[in-house]
Length: 226
Image 1: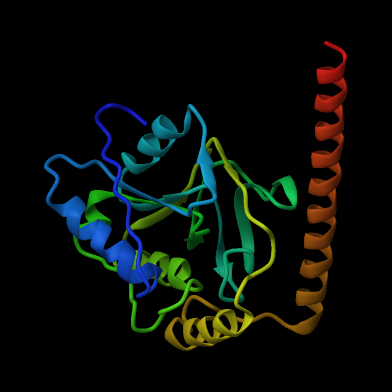
Image 2: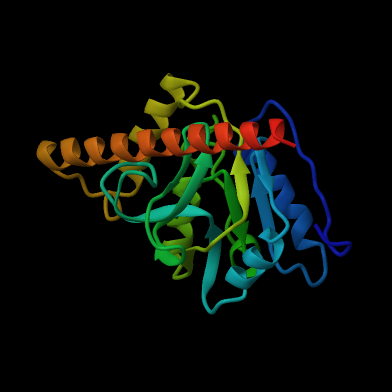
């Protein structure tokens, strides 16, 4: 963070969408605000992240910037995309999904950076997405429908999550809601294509785990050798 940045904390039992909307309301009252960065509480930003995010937000027509995402959805999440971009660094290790910079339809909600054109006019939907899931896809598609860009850029970050989807019932409910709300963006593929994409993802995840294990062991050995 810079000394110019303002940290806004929100919590409550009325869901992440309601909390994010309160943050956006406060951001609209801040003169000259260049962007709002919405982070999960298990995401850590590195030293370069601020300038990387601002560089993305300042590009023409951008509404949302994220670290990893996809376009050409066949399901309700960014991973369910025909073309993906960015990288993940989380419970499963580090893995590259595609180009470092790309226009996409949605980005992962672990990091949503909103430009002034987006947060000034578009809010999250707490009624349709009262729980933790689905809000990121829905918001990004709102931005795309409003004619703004959703962009993946290189961001220096680590996601210290625990893996999995959490509340599976809420996840399924939000997925069904997204499919009903966005049929023009979420276009299913056949079972064969789904199988090969799932197999490819398994290889990517296992590769990330192996890389993470090797790097952790190497750091441990180097530490003991000092």
